[in-house]
Structures are given as C-alpha cells and as structure tokens.
Amino acid sequence: MFQSFTWQQFLVAALVFSLVWLLIVALVFYRKELFALLSGSSPDEAKRSVEPLKHAWQEDFEGSGDDDLMGRQALPDGVSIVSQDDFGFRRPVEVVAEGIDSPVADPDELLQSDVFDLMQNLKPLLSDHSLSKEDFIEQVNDEVSDFPRLLKSPLLVSVYEQIVDEVNEGVMAFKISLTELQEDL
Image 1 (cartoon, rainbow, N blue to C red):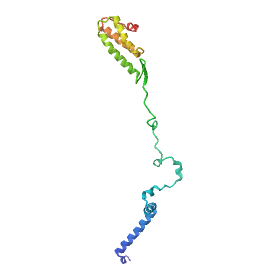
Image 2 (image 1 turned 90 degrees about the horizontal axis):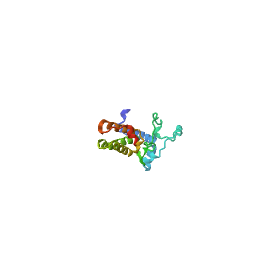
Image 3 (image 1 turned 30 degrees about the vertical axis):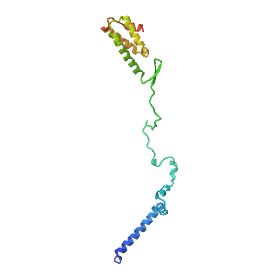
Image 4 (image 1 turned 180 degrees about the vertical axis):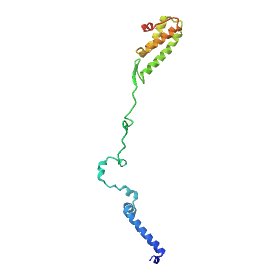
C-alpha cells in the first residue's frame, strides 16, 4: 500500500496536514490576534483588550496588586518602613549665654571650652611676678567674671583649686588659699 504513493504525493499530503494542524492551533489559541491581523489592526491592540477571567476569590483581593498574591513579607519585630518626613534629628539644646540664645550641642562642652579659655587668659597672670597678692586675686576674679556660665557651674571650684595649686607650688612669691580666692568673687 505504501508503494503506491510517490514521495511527491507524501510530501504534499504531509504539508497539507501540517497546515491544517497549524490553522486549528492558531484558531484555538490565537483567535483574537489572528482576527486582528486579518482585519488590519495591530496585534498589540488586541492584547490590550484581553481581560483576565474573574475568579470567585478575586473579590477578597481587589485592593492588592498582582505581584503580592501570597501577601507581603512580615517585617521583623521593631522594624517599620517610614518616609523621610517621619523621622528627624534631635533639636539642639538652647543655652542662654550672656543674653543671647545660642544653640549648642552639649552644655558641658561649652563649659569645658570656657574653662580652657579662662586658663589661657590666666597664664600671663601666673607668670607675672610683680603682682601683689591682692592684685592677683582681683585680676583672677575679673577674668572669671568674664565667663558667666562658669560662675554658676561646679567646675569653678576645680578651676580655683588648680590656680591655688599653681600659685602655692612656688610660681608666685606668695601663698594663697581657696577661700581667699572665693571671698572676693
């Protein structure tokens, strides 16, 4: 029976059956695109008009997007997502210095800088051997009064103790006590 067909007849029959098969597949799976192509419109327009089937469970997930069908990952404890407007940095502490409001990060740092400046101002006094005891106490207290924040600070006592130690170590020709320095203040 197969000897009665020629190769030409076999190839033509195979080609016809293949074309029929492809036509059936195209009609079943690519019907809208095929009709859009035959009618002259672009296949992209046909794809845009395709609407997915409605499922019974879809009403429960109307608000969620297609990318989170399983739901979103829960964040670890203590972690939250915030926008740039939801957080900020601590405002600087307002310190009133000599009648002027000046924002300072830390009042203790400000006092330490005052102590440093005061000690720098007192160095020439400690090296001046021509001063009498009363003149020395008066000039030290004048320098201290230039730093009003330091007058209210407990650091003032340690500054006075340091001055007394330097004077009593023999830098000056006289000896001085802590109470003598604090009395004239």
